Image 1 (cartoon, rainbow, N blue to C red):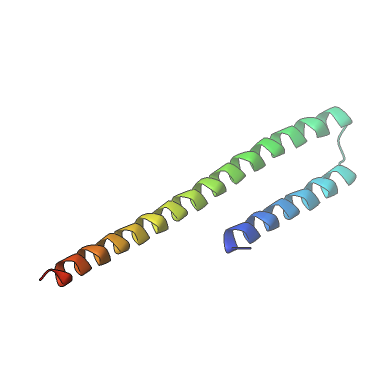
Image 2: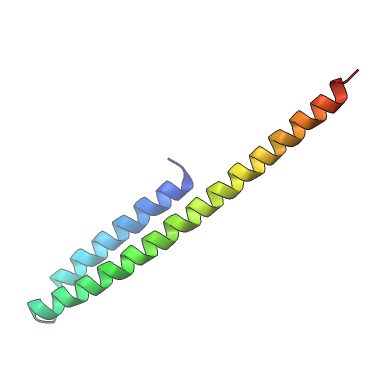
Length: 83
C-alpha cells in the first residue's frame, strides 16, 4: 500500500473512532446529534475529496514528469544514433 493509501486509511479510521466516541458521549438530544453528525460527515466528505484531488494532482505531475523524461531520452537516442 502506498503512502497516500495509508493516509486515507488512517483518516477513515480516525473519523470512525471520533464519530463513535461522539455518539456515545453526546450530551445533546437525538435530533441535534443527528444534525451535528450530518454536518460533520459533510465536512469529512469535503476533506476527503480535497485529499483525493491533491493525490490525483501529485500523481498527474509525476506521470507528466516521467513522460517528459522518456521523450527526452528517446529524442537523445534518435539524435545520437543518426549516422
